[in-house]
Length: 160
Image 1 (cartoon, helix red, strand yellow):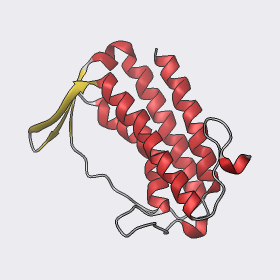
Image 2: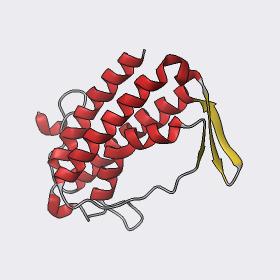
Image 3: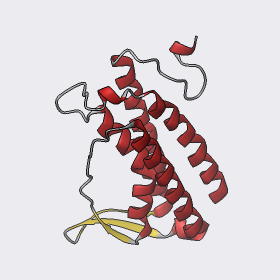
Image 4: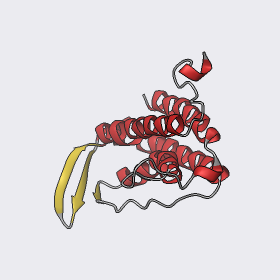
């Protein structure tokens, strides 16, 4: 199972890389709405989610983090963040193994339990599905900017 998840992690990272490679560096500060993350913030967040959440899930009990949202200045910064993040997530998955994934994990805030679940559930939801959600947002940002959207699971409308 672990190697299956790592293959998925790497395969999906390739789709994320396709998006990151299309981001215009001169638009990294652009945001579609005042309450939205900027293009750069969203892209860096999506790139860093697997590794960041692997670190969060590594301890049996984790304090709810304040998620920083720095804005990158270059596309290369995004691509490097993705590589580091995916590598870290893959390492943690191997380190945990199937038994470690079945261990209970708890998110707390000031000593109060917010969430408790098997690490496997949180890894699927946070390390994987969370990225897919943000990647979908990035495709909308690209569309709004008039930039062709790469296909993720087959050709996009722009590939026709």
